[in-house]
Image (cartoon, rainbow, N blue to C red):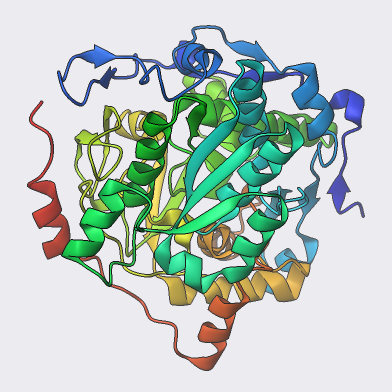
Length: 449
């Protein structure tokens, strides 16, 4: 029996899929943080090519040849059949996983990092500032900047900066400068430290610091690793590959599962499939987004207008949010500690086209260990949330006898997250309840739109 479905380099997609023209209702606009009027991305922050992609109505956007050549270092990525996991669960379900952990950075993030670095270089800039949560994005962008000879400054969420020191070392190996956030390098960082010297940081804070950095330097562009439309666009190479791979074995998923923090990894996998649902060809397709119970923006946040960052420098977007001032608990899935969610994911959920669930980290790590002991891959804490739901759905098939096809978006490995596994095995890992009172307080600071 074949456990892998492989594509050749010649079969790698040469265009990204843009879902915007296929949405059944238009996406709500971005609003200017000052005027509250519809706006584009702040012109000084992003290359013009990415501004164009953010609002493009073209269904397919060509991948530059220079980007394709770098992609070929790890793409196309494998689609694996999880026979051993199916056997361990004694389920009739067929489980497949699209594995992005084979990239040099160990995750899906280089799919957009390389593209963004390319466009910054092409437009003549020398430096990129960015933020990172668990470190996957910072690692990927450090690598992308290295390929195109750009300087890279990374503001790493403080709790992850100390929890995951080897992510920091990886970024530095590729030439990036990494600092903890909040920190002393920016005005917003100094202000937050003055108010709370022990602040663990958050993606919202780190975004504010990186944006402030970009505004302060004429040779610098800002880069975001998730949430924005152009970022999700670049990730669709994974979903297009997965669709081709499943077609080779005459299969189509009944259920697609992935984790969401900002939403780029899972969007990249499910967008090419949800197009079929939107167009009525696969009305029963179930798409399940999984987030942490400690930061449940989609499952427990209101769908409303909010800033993308703590300082209110970024545009206001319509999304499920816990409030831009909310600081999530110190869970180990650092990439899922964002107060909001990608507007397209929120829009699709609001329209009833996708589902969302929240999970606690102790059962998540239990499921990760089950997966590792069956398939051999130690998953990062972020996609481990999705593995928990995949196992739940496979066990439902065991009870019902249904032979469903389940596709997992496995965004990366957990080789730099073994401290979290240590805490799980030692019994020190904690589950954090949804901090209702803190969220209610944060929601009082929503912009008046």
